[in-house]
Amino acid sequence: MQAGFSNSGFFYKRAALIGTGLIGGSLGIALRERRLVESIAGYDRDRRSLEAALKKGAVDEVAGTPAKAARGADLIILAVPVLSTVELLREILPAVWEGAVITDVGSTKSWIMEETAGLMPPSVHFIGGHPMAGSEDSGIMAADAAMLENAIYVLTPAPGCPAPILDNLEKMLRETGAQTLILDPDTHDRVVAAVSHLPQVVAAALVQSVAGTENKELIQTLAAGGFRDSTRIALSNPGLWRDICLSNSRALSKALSSFRDSIDSIKKYLAEGNAEAIEEFFREGRDYRRDIPYRGRGILPELYEVVVLIRDTPGAIGHLAGLLGEAGINIDAIEIMHVRELAGGSIRLGFRNQDHQQQALELLTRKGYCAHRKQ
Image (tube, rainbow, N blue to C red; front, side):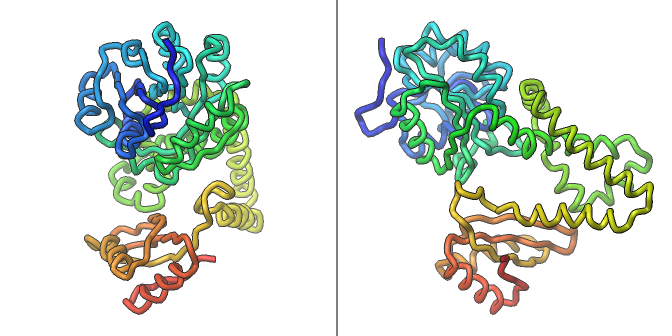
């Protein structure tokens, strides 16, 4: 049998979602809510997750095995931990129809692309995928289609993948609100190791560095905004990150070496009492951090930003958003920058055009907020 493009207005006629956790569930909900595929068959080895996915609208029907979910599907999404992807692919391939597109959502791409290269029949197309979205929460109950909104979604097509096949998948993903980016697997892994995998390791290490010290209760009391912000991602799924680290060990090891060099430098400056070098260390970090755009440069549209100070009171963010909404000013992005317990913090608001930026600044200033335009 042969799979193919749907001629009924959908990008794909039948999709299979194998893995109904946070990312898989969010993708399934987005595809169904926006009617991008005609139907989705789901499978998860956790029966409770699969049943919850059906109730939440991530899938239309459930299958008893991965192969049964994949049979007859022209799009197959493997939303499982990285190290389980290849084994799962071997299991379903005998049931996959000609012309089907298979993609994954793993955070590592080189290993998966290398392992799948020798498995795929010529009539089936594998396109690596990595939606750069997530949460410290895990599982289907935390899944939400909004998670893909404005998220960068990296695709790493196998060599020789026909352009129409890649274009169809890319167009569908854009319809979920994601911003697609085509990369080769090695480039993806090097960059993601530095900006995603390394911060995860550092967050876990930072927590461990204080976990075994004395005055545990005092540390927990004083661990305010800075520590919590820096270590929030340490709450993520340990099994997921085990697989990511193992499958991207080469790139991550290089990123860790670079990080260690930075730590060794500041240790050296402290031992020397080198005030000038210490200040320069922090200045360089501040200046580079300032240059990182709030949205991806060249991928997402430029945002015009306003930074607002708010008090830590119930409904403060909702009230601020309500004021702008009533005035017809749409907020395209919002970020909590700093939170100080019992005091409040800074909120960064992003707008698609300068007119909305200016209108927001004037309105919030009139309403008594301390706000300024971020250059």
